[in-house]
Length: 76
Image 1 (cartoon, rainbow, N blue to C red):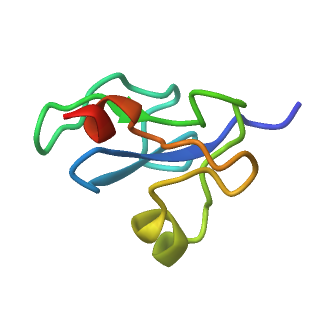
Image 2: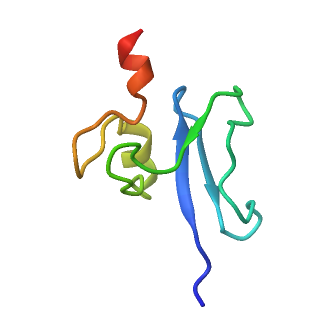
């Protein structure tokens, strides 16, 4: 059985991962650098975030459906 792995980020663009050696086994709710909520998948279509580091840092919108990863930030 394959190990579940993923990458995510918070609204401040701090990145994180889980399931890799030396990383937590499960996704975590909050960023350890700023305390904001971590996003591990698109809130609209559930697509995973890009696992390429440069693309992950640059991405603010889902490449599959175009929705914002941080919809509440766009309202503010």
